[in-house]
Amino acid sequence: MMNVEQARFNMVEQQIRPWDVLDFKVLDLLQLTPREAFVPKGYEELAFADMEIPLDHDEIMLAPKMVARMMQAANIHESDVVFEVGTGTGYGTALLAKAAREVESVDIHPDFIETAKRNLAAQGIDNVSLDSRDAAQGVGSDKLYDVIIITGSLPSLPESFQQSLQRGGRLVAVVGTAPVMETVLITRAGDNEWNQETLFETEIPALRNVETVKRFTF
Image (tube, rainbow, N blue to C red; front, side, top):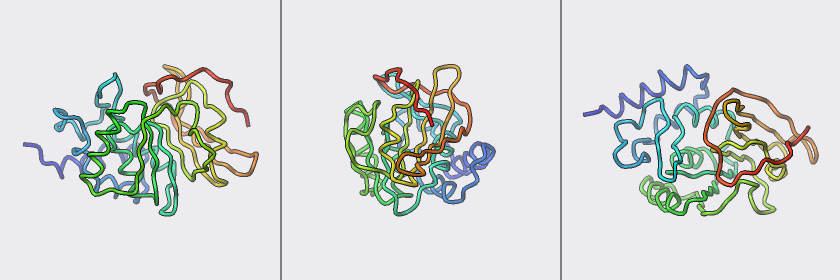
C-alpha cells in the first residue's frame, strides 16, 4: 500500500525542487492538493511519478514538475483572474484556483470537463468556471486576464492570446514543434508592448486543431 503523504513529499523534494521550482507558494500548493484524487482510475499508484499519465482521446496529464514550473512562471497573485486552456482532469485547475481569485478553464473534450467538475467539487473548489470549447486560437472573448496558461503546445502562438492579457498580465505557453519546443513567459508591458522570456525546452502534445500561424514578433 502506497504511503500517500510520503509519496507526495518525495514528489516535491526529489522531482520538483531539483527542477528549479523554489517558490514556497507553489511548493505549498503541491503539498496541499491531492494529486491522487485527479488521476484517472487505475493510475493512483502513479499519481506522484515523474511521468505524463495517459488520458482518453490520446491526451495526457502533464508531469508534476511541468505543472509546477508553469505555475511558478505565472507568478499568480490572490487577486488574479486566470484563463486556462486544457482542463484535463482538473489538477492544474485546482492549483490555479487555490492561488488565484477566479479561474476560467476550457477543454475541447466535454467528458474531460465533466470529470474535472466532479473532481473539483469533491475538493470543495468553487471559484472555477468550466466550458467545453476549442480555444486553440485564443480565449474567444474581449475579456482581459491577469494570467493565461496553455497546457498543450502550439507550433506558433496566435497574437490573440497576448492581446487578451491585462497590462502586467503573464502568459505561459509551450511553443514550437517536436522535437524543439520552448516554454515561454510573455508579459504585457503596455498597450502595444510585450516582453518574452524563454524559460526551458520541453516537449508536450499539441492542442487539438492548432494551425501554423504567423509567429508574433516583438
